[in-house]
Length: 225
Image (cartoon, rainbow, N blue to C red; front, side, top):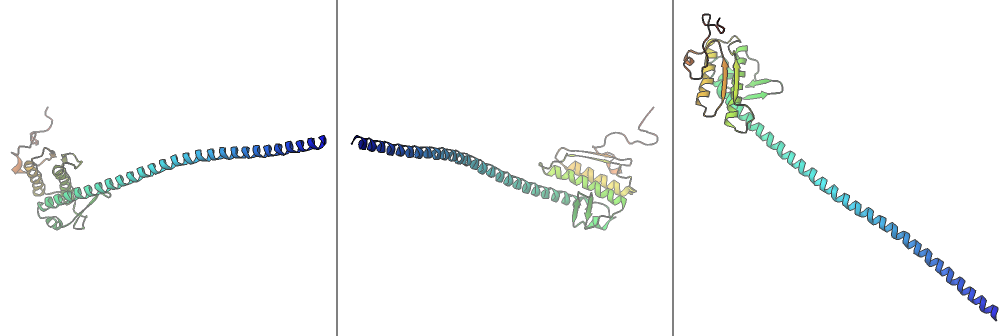
């Protein structure tokens, strides 16, 4: 009978040992799963942080693109407005040239090709040397006029023209250009500076207030010894 009791007790102990082992295995499995879930949770949290940063960077990029596009559009509008002022001023100036070029007498359209350094008047760019000198001088003056009319125009209110009469231009024509420049300067209420050097000033301008220095001749040379 004692043997039977001991056998039953041993069987019970073995059964509980097995149960305990199985439970310990389940606990170990749960612990590992818990560790994995914790790792996954950390990854998800890190992902959420990175995702939020990604969205923030994306929003900043979109804002930069919008700002750039708006600024580019603003610059485009400003350039077009500035070009219109220059072109309209150049048209007015060319109309005051003496009657030597048909295009200058009726300049309906001006096209400024800054890339190739060409000015088209009514679609034409090939003019005589003297007419090109008039055209370029009037263009420089139109730039000055634009900078005076528009405070935001980033161009110095200064113009320097040197020896405009050296392109085979007849005196009547460069004298007329001198008078155009002097008339504009005297009528402008905005401070500016124009330096125009010439060896032959228009007779009407000899008493002009803007003249500085003497008129040099063979008898009155620039260097006196």
